[in-house]
Length: 199
Image (cartoon, rainbow, N blue to C red; front, top):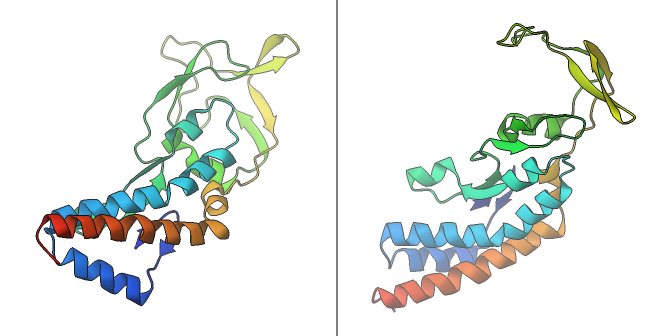
């Protein structure tokens, strides 16, 4: 019923029967909003755990991890996800860089989750032009002591995978999310059912 990154919360039959009974007694859109709200509250601790697992020099990725309604919610199936899908471009100061840079974590989250291979990186190789708009060459800016040295290529050690969502949703967090979902949802639906005249 509630889904994180590969994580589903299934209600037990008794709780599910009660939820369905209450949903049938209130307007559909009202019920959907109540379910989505309860799911967001239930997985908020998991979102905070994911943020705590981030190792980010700029803080941009941690700031971008949000809980939002999923795509299925638009089709009448309440769903929430923890993701960076709505991340906005941020201006940050990257250690070793002289000027602030514009970054959007949505475009590099996969590199954090899956890791990167080691190897030689050459500036301006691939789809990116080797020169800037003003015609100057592109270089890597490498901190050496108190100075910044420009290099055309560098040896990158690669990065280890950091499955921040899997870590956040492992073990006791699943049980907590289940308990919180039923604890938030059923009382809220009962209140709405009473408001709309159901017994």
